[in-house]
Length: 168
Image (cartoon, rainbow, N blue to C red; front, side):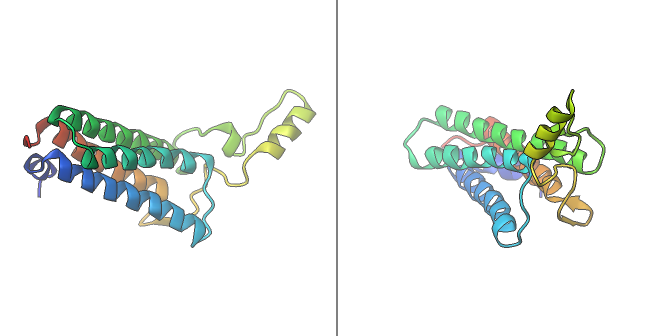
């Protein structure tokens, strides 16, 4: 079924429930992989979590607080933006993992320094988990890649509801 048909059939309040549940599921899945499967997150993994937390808060407000339709649409647009941000970070992170993009020096093993002491200090402060190694993948897609796909679809969904959904 076409995503835009589903989105235009929804009012903003049920869309907030979908956004909140999806963000909670994605963030919960990340924590589950960390604490139950022992996949330690790298710095880019951690940065993908914050927009999901923002969606959980924004969607909760959008659903629970009495607001005008216009304010609800603005909050849905903010959810779409947050999903787009985490999708963008996921795209970048997946590109780093697949060797298509240059990652941050601090978490890709490319520590540099002008002196031997600076290089040693940079290596000692570098995170143990590297951003350029995917610790898990399914069907050739890493967790960052799945975050990109899911969050990208959710960004489109929230944006379509915000822009073209029915009025309450």
